[in-house]
Length: 251
Ligand SMILES: C[S@@+](CC[C@H](N)C(=O)[O-])C[C@H]1O[C@@H](n2cnc3c(N)ncnc32)[C@H](O)[C@@H]1O
Image (tube, rainbow, N blue to C red):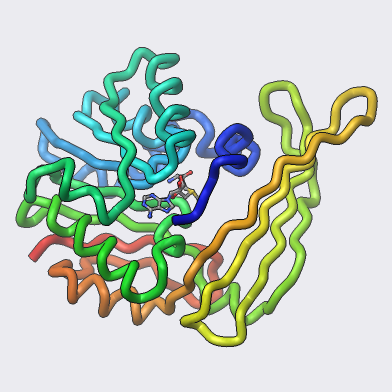
């Protein structure tokens, strides 16, 4: 599994201004949240630092937040405490989820923010989607967001350096993404992310991590969702846009 041990401490520099506040993070999913029953149970299964989970709890939704990374789960618990929210946190990879929850427990499962590409290839992705599907009640929905890997791969290996300083907690940082694009789709790819914090004296502190990922085409994802017993209800896929959202319901 991919790490996030080093990035967890500085992850807010990677979150857009628009999604930093928990309420705004949840509001970015208003369309799908409107589909939930009043007593909804929701799982965020790659919760990261917890903005979405805490934002959902702030709306009175019963939320469980899971992640494979200990550091991310700890940060979610801390954010939840800071906001006085009621979020249950569990450290679990996608494949481990059925060991923690009964089948059919949730009305909605979120796997958002460029997470699924960390599943190891088609087999790992299939197992992850199978777990998420099992935990959904019949008619429940998986909400997934993804990078448009068709676009990412077409650009090849490269360095992306932010064109503005990102300011969080009173500290400015330059954010750098180094993309290692493998020759073939099914091979392991890498993204190295570096957050170079600059203080008032000009000193630079760098936090970086090399992450593994396995890209997939939109059409492959649709077929894999189908195999996991999920029917695509909506997709915003557009080959020219950076990201897309898929909503799939449990058949
Ligand atoms: C790019 S972050 C996204 C976090 C959050 N959803 C967001 O939108 O900011 C990807 C997350 O997926 C988690 N992750 C990676 N592999 C995982 C796995 N096999 N099972 C569960 N979570 C995983 C990482 O620990 C990390 O928190």
